[in-house]
Every structure is written in C-alpha cells, then in structure tokens.
Length: 97
Image (cartoon, rainbow, N blue to C red; front, side):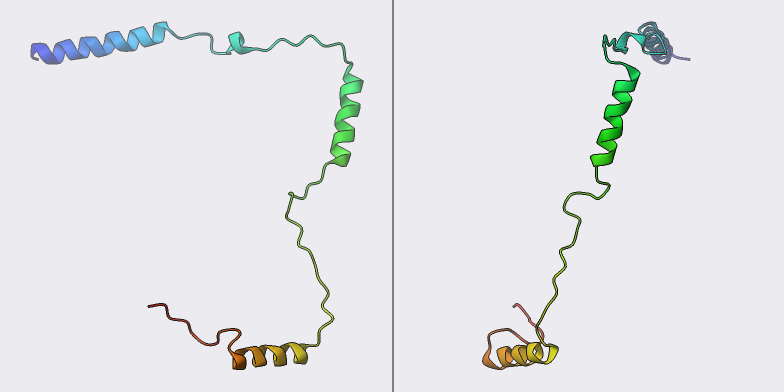
C-alpha cells in the first residue's frame, strides 16, 4: 500500500471519529419545549370539541355552483346556429399558421 492511500484512509477514519464525537443524545431532549400553563385538561378538551364542530371537511373553493337554466334546448341550438352563420363564433377546425 502506498503512502497516499494510507494517509487518505487514516484521514477518513479520523474524520469519521470526529463526526461521532459531536453527536448528542438520541432523544433530542435539548429541543424539548417546556410549557407552563394554568388551563385544565377539561378546558382544553372543550375548546377542541367546539373547533371540531365548526370546521368543515370540504376544502375552500371546492363547491361547484349549480345553475338551473330556464332556456329551451331547441332555442339555444337555433341561436348557436345563427351565430355560426353570421360569423359571431367560429366553426370547424382552427389552424394557426
């Protein structure tokens, strides 16, 4: 084994050992939050129950507005045919060149 390979392997082992030396507790207790509260468990449960009753499971904006048309199907078809004849709306395939 040449000196460069030996040096690199020793450096890698040293780096790995140094990385392990910086490890902390596995449970992460230094990040634990401490809360000091004077509310009882029953008060919190009652508040959670009222929030659950007023919350909707339907995402905002997902309701489709329904519309009941009073127009006659034949009249709408006749108006569409007239609009095509007069050129107010296009008909057929459109090819943009």
